[in-house]
Image (cartoon, rainbow, N blue to C red):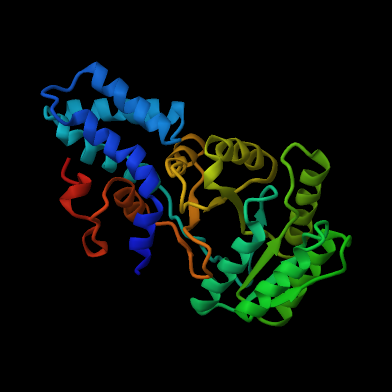
Length: 319
């Protein structure tokens, strides 16, 4: 099964909550009135877009409807898709590899699948032709180093580690030196799954950043925050706090499969202006891919999408 079809399947529950509800709202309606807009807003909130984002989306929909003289309720859905797609496409979604080695710091709370995500990301980047090294800087969790080593063996990627309880910044330093010596393209640094309320752990994260920047100005070049899509609005709250504390540059959204909360992607981009870089749609090693706004917007609303026809009029591009 192609990735676009797996994405479509992963968003099926969100699509049932959002797209099918929108279809039911506009079916049989003869006019576009304020009550219809309010019902659309409620549908967006229920799909975990978030109240503020839902309000902004519907407000933009009102403007588009007026500017394009839309009178048929059935035309609201493609118009809304285009609005969402435009929001998600405002920024390049994939990591931009500025120099060699590009340093990626990965952060997140316990339980979001951070270390597993790092393994999948390493696999993807290696398959793209890059030499990748992993740094086991999560030295607090007993199994974290072993888990990263397992992923290193599975993907054929070197892992730089110290003993449990070692200084995470020292691990990051050694891994960066190894990356330079081995002519690696990308260094991915794992960090302890920290609660965003723990100030000492946040300070440690900043220390890792300072150590990396001292060796290579501008490092880390990307700070990716791993979020669990199933937590819905809590994921947005985590992103707000991590963004303020550590300068998050991108989101990796995991566990999109089997959740009705896929709308959180829109909420993250609209309310925080942090781009979603990668999405995880399954447990397989190849189930982490770069986020593509056009595919996501289509899969969020239509079950019968065609990867060769993403830019068709169905997404409202002529509105």
